[in-house]
Length: 447
Ligand code: MV4
Image (cartoon, rainbow, N blue to C red; front, side, top):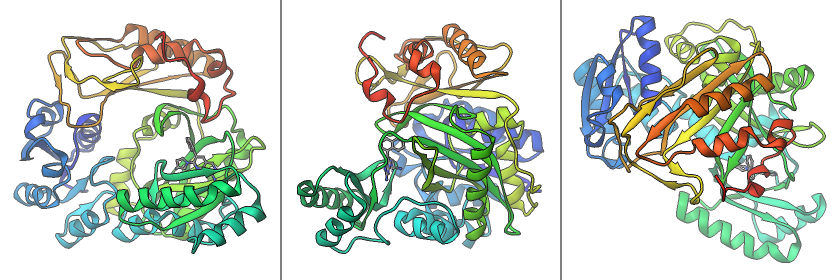
């Protein structure tokens, strides 16, 4: 097994990886910016190396600094976590060049799935259902209008280099086409340096449901069921749950099979997520594939009793997957606790945590790097904790989640806890009958 893993990340995910390494008897190296000197991942790792200044570009995104830290500490693998360099093809290939195992996707895989139009074509070839639209990139406005007329409005145009909602435009009728096309291309060029666009039929009020998969170096993949991520605000997930209220055993089998077919078609190695849109007829369509461990992975761990970080490390080392698909035995939800003010447009609220009480009890897991007296730096993502709750039924999860949220004390800063408490009381949320549009009509004013 690997002897020493460097974690090229910070915050809760750095701690999460350190915990599994400890249990596996693997030594850990933390890297940190000057803003994170007092962070828990620095204290809990076996070794720690300062890699630069507070801005990510000078620390957590600096490939030479991270490779140097791995070299001087003699780490044999790097875990990138999520965000930062986790889906950076150059970083993956530089690690390989230096003989350091990158615990993530190969550069080729990252590139293949990073280009959304070609990822879609690859999945379609593997038999995964995709949304009707253009074959690859659109060549002109005229071609776009022709296809839209055939598949009927509304349609959506998406940046092939985009993802997570950037560079998209919904088009309701033909006379909106040209402006949407020009705007989306300008935006994509500026954001990604690439203005390639593809077109799809617009699926109204879908659910966002993703399948967790793990593939090994022998080309075999298995799935660990779905996560429902429909509770989002401006493409930021706020709560995830599993199993999905709209996925039954039959649909789970079908989506799981499709995700495995997609992963095996590309020889996917490591943990990955295949994202689908599910429409009101329970038809599902491939949307994107994420080639990293995701923020919301713990809910899958809680319902399948399977350590996904351990599995990532094992397959990276060359140990094959079991070949078994894992089905949920429990229900679980994750609330993202962010240092943001939910009654003021989710404005970031960094600063010092003056008092802290972390909830506990049966079925409650908190993944967090914060402690009383910790100062949240303004430089990074505002997520400060993940509250993960599991129970026998969805109803019990909601009751337990509300109890745990009420027990959670974070003083000195504003957090999303009051929003989540209100969500647990929402009848529509409780019914399980909501779509990705749910939070658009949510009343955030009296939180
Ligand atoms: C769509 C769609 C409807 N129809 N594609 C948003 C993020 C990016 N990954 C793709 N997204 C969407 N693509 C078609 N053909 C609706 C969305 C979408 C969405 C998807 C998942 C979760 C939240 C969303 C919020 C708005 C739009």
